[in-house]
Length: 315
Image 1: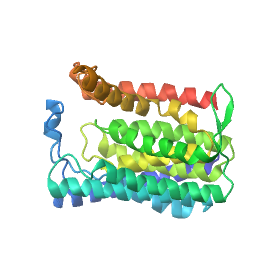
Image 2 (image 1 turned 180 degrees about the horizontal axis):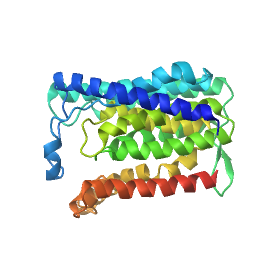
Image 3 (image 1 turned 135 degrees about the horizontal axis):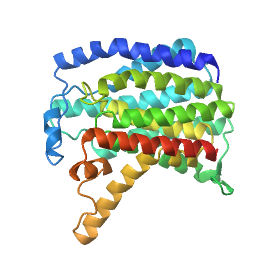
């Protein structure tokens, strides 16, 4: 691995560490505090008022670092489009929570519409540039999805974006798990010859590491939807650009499990009136089983690391 990747990572890390306290101070002054769900774990009520929208820390760091360190290719501009576009949607969502003083922001259909338009724009650009519609299934055959490939892209990118958003419920959980997934994709991109994407991943890993210092338990700031939606969307986009769409299901397995727990909970309650989990997403279930927040995060990080290694072997 080229030493320039680690330089890129370190520069992004440094920018996040330096800008973090400034942004946290400004958000405190503006009283952009988290509105905690009333039906959530009781211990989370003490987090009410903690500054949110912390995703702007690593997004700012990523952009500044990218100006100097990341090759300016089509892939780079597409990744910037997706991460900033979803970041903007997340920012609007976070701002609406602040304005209306409630834990829920934009209506789901409005967020999904905005995300779908971004993915469709991405699909058009990739189609014009001859992006393959063939999908490789790990340890299985390759399948040419043809004209339904854009729909597959929608599922991958929007699904990944909202899966990370669901995972962002404990201090450091989403940011730490995303770092592990991005590190895996940095190595995958480099090994497959996508140097530009590898540099982008390196910059984002460093930026998220710097943010994690302030998002560590007890968190001084939360990433908010501006961070979680953008991180998840860019993970899905990296998978699409590197043609490793199904590998993301393995590497991002924690995000998949969190999403499945919500789907299972909703379906079970609708048809049986009973809950499978004490609470969903899955991390809250373990909290209500008596695990400390720190234990849940550590165990999930460990599982994410094992899944990332499994994904690397599968490429």
